[in-house]
Image (cartoon, rainbow, N blue to C red; front, side, top):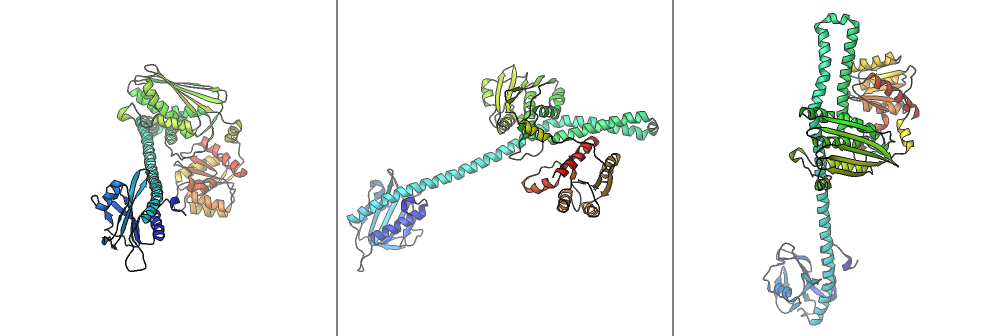
Length: 543
């Protein structure tokens, strides 16, 4: 490798000194470079002498000053001087110049000779050293530039990583802020649902004779059932709002109209309850035409709509109308979200998508619309914003339509009537276990029960089952371990897992997703259970 192609400064300097030493038959040599943060010249490399603390030259050193000011080399013969740990009789110092800048000093000590005394340096030696130092200076300049670029690159990477971390924290804060804004409305809705359940059951306990009136009890039970479903719906919409997101989400056919309905429903505590408490009446209008699905991630799109709804609500402090309009324009789905709020000036409209830009003061993080824009970009969509002060704002979003074949594939096969099945039910909660067994027996299925994963595996070995239903969280052996064990024995066996937690299969759980045929969230409602069971059987048969 040539000296000029090296990019490591220390290695380059040492190689240059070694070659110059051979060329001039030197006893020793050294190379000083100027420290970037001071005027001190520090040793970078030396050959034929020991490097020690004495190998530095400070401002005022006659030799260095002379070379630096003149930009010319100097020869000092018969000086008998100590340089570091080396006794020097003859010394030649040459400046390292590159692009008009002096980078340092190249020093050579004593030419070797046959007799005991070293030969002095002459002008021919200086000419060779100057030519050599010129090439060395260029190479060192390139190496220093490369080192600087490396350092800048590392600093840039660190700054980018810090920025990404900050953005993630801000996005997390934005979601928590939005969730906090919904909290009072959610509490209100949950209390309404619980009040109905507690009210009717307390009446029965206090007045047992009411149970004799069959029609009245049936009416009360229907009311309790409706209230319980409402409470379940509140929990599920919170799950839908705040489930963890993973990078690179899979794009599937999504109905924009359905996601809009979900987002309006999820955000109702904000635009109806909280706004109403502040004396503002907000009306939501849905002008949703029949449009084909787009390819997207429903959770991201739902979050996008929720942010737009929150933004519109904040823009209508005295009330107004929020309108969702969907239509098809050639091969694109067009969505318009319009409010009759305070609107934006041209200056604010141009900046509103920038991260951390907010007009809400301490109430805002400035990430809401930035997140909206990011989601639109990930879905390869476009965004236009029309707004006038005092006349409201319209967000116009366009997405490419998905292929119709993908939508048909996503719909899957509908649930059909099932013949009597033999079902193994594994659940450690006796109330939930009894509920699932009742559901199955009412539909003429035969059940075998187990109250732990270990017991369930033992009974699976002893019996023949068409499908296994298991809880996710159990002592000793949870539902995931049980499912894996069963799949090792019977890979095609359908497994319906029931869980009270939001489950996201990440990269560390690739095999977990393969062993669960269908996942059903608690609380288990009969209507949903009757859909999930046939789906598990159908998918299991097609595996």
